[in-house]
Image (tube, rainbow over all chains, first blue to last red; front, side, top):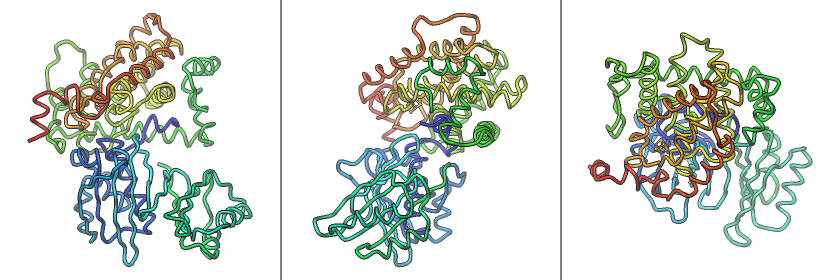
Length: 220
Length: 279
Ligand code: SF4
């Protein structure tokens, strides 16, 4: 852990896992969706469900969906702010089997875009996305991340990495997931440096690529 | 890179002040300029002060279990402690209560233990410049980094010794350095503070960071002051700091999960706690 993960973060209490981490999950979801959702369904699981109310986990998630950072003093009022901005919120509980104790399943929509996301808060404000739209995809959001959905056929991984290599992008980690053979697959790539917009657009136009989502969070 | 042992930290501090050795390792670790690091630490110091200054004794946590104690401590006559001691206790309570009431605090090293460092440092503002107190935060963070690497700073992993205990060890080192103690004396102070809280369980009532968390911040602070006084008096420890930290890890591993933030054991399992959770 770096020095400021020990002395820090600056955050709204009371819990780095149940509050600060929850804000971060909401924030990541909002970024992946492309902006503030019009409608959000939050399903809390495990310890999030059991002690979430006292820790303000619901308020924290909503604050993140509204684009707030973990140290935003408006977090306690997020229900109110969401209502004022016209974001519809539904709260519920779910039992996600085999999931980390601090987990949440989010269903979001913004205009005609929809997104579902399962994520966990790991402690100390750090989080991990576990699945997107029901498909496994794990990443922390701590470094610039590309989430590429593509047809599951031979050569796709090679093409993507060749393209990235050609543009001098050094891949820090790469993970592959697929729903079933020959169906849809997901590549999650993490980088040390930001991925330029031009390159993301080029990737999107490669045959066999269905979507390219990019996440880059500024450090807190 | 971050120091992997107190031993290595003391070696690096042979020909420069402790805080500077820690600052330099941060610059190397994160690849940033000195101004960036100092500004970040200054912001943290300012946030600690702002939390205490913005404290409102009328506020209660969402569960209603905590709030107002910092104000009570400020207003009460003193019986045993001097004015610094009273402020230490009040500041620990206030920060802990701010955290429970969803105010902005600095996790140091965690939100639950966020009151320990502000408690011992903020009341020194008249005696020491902000610059000196920010350097003390570097010392605290440097020791905390080694604790996080070798043991843990998470109650869910290591019990409350890892949260309040770690904060207390960090604060003891910072206080010792602030009065001109040698790096070895800082390590001794940290070791003593950690030793005194070894085995402390994490047993929050209802799983909330409220009871006993808020008041435990006071113990972390008072223990740090005692450890720093002892170290500055030339009292050392038999077991070196690194070994104490490793012991904390071993003890944490041996704690049953009911005593590691699950809210199932310790005070959380008392009849009163159970009744409160149901109501
Ligand atoms: S009892 Fe547990 S939750 Fe409370 S301060 Fe200690 S470690 Fe943190």
